[in-house]
Image (tube, rainbow, N blue to C red; front, side, top):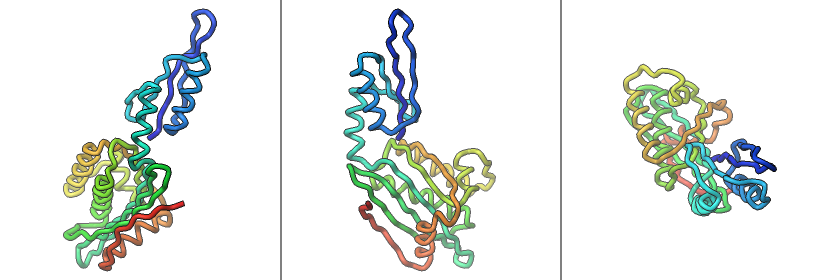
Length: 218
């Protein structure tokens, strides 16, 4: 989650100046806010997150202590592979996140039956990643979703229309899950060669090779 600072700079006389920072990470925002208050030149420091929630410095300090123990700084790579002959979809997900001071990677895949096309497989893969995030205890976080299906990502953002009834049902399920978890999604299309991990997992699921692993990374 990114945060923005607002504060009032105290000048001599009555001409105080209002300042707003760029979007920055929580630890940097708190450090800046504390420095502003301790300098004696700043007052009325307020912190905003990307969802519009506000905190004081004291509340921000407590929030970051709580967040540190939960999964955060989450980036998800997803992919859906489709087999026309069997109408099956292989779903692949790779999730990078921090917890405490450590970084982790989750790799998982699954096989879905009765799929209609590759776009539906991509939607199913997104929904699968959301279920994984729910199992990890992710909630009220900004999550970046990266995939190589621009059509699906643009439809999820609402930039492109979706006319297929079965895909709209997936959209509804995804939006409902996102709302339940309080996730603020960021969607980023990437080239296929940058999505090799998730693509491989999706292919392995279609071959009957199932993976569910978590490891610490450096």
